[in-house]
Amino acid sequence: MNQITQVAVLIVGGLSFCAGILLISRNGWLTMRYTLGWLFVGVCIMIGGLLTGLVGPIADFIGVSSNALVIAVAAIAFLALTVQLSITVSGLLERTRTLAERNALLEQRIEALRAADPNPSPRRGRE
Image (tube, rainbow, N blue to C red; front, side, top):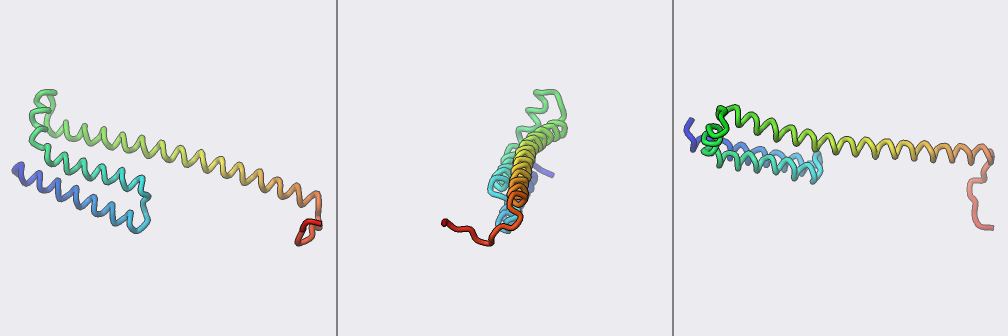
């Protein structure tokens, strides 16, 4: 496959990826925060397509094969994405734990109020 074909395939692939992400986001399955993150990945795919001519010289300078360089860059990008998602999940778990604790405290207060007044009137107003 010649270089022009590679660039075209990567650009079309990146555009297709971005279109899919926008469709998923439009259906409400993905929040704006993650939509922007995944759109950034799609743009990186397209930019990578434009920079395919630089892979060979950079790989030669570093002393690795072109395939190894591409795989290493992709692995680093996905590791960074995984760390970002792990941070988000950790924050959500903390918020969930806090909400569960607050809910338990509220239930405890309600039970204490019920125990103090076993026959509450249906409506209490100012007297």
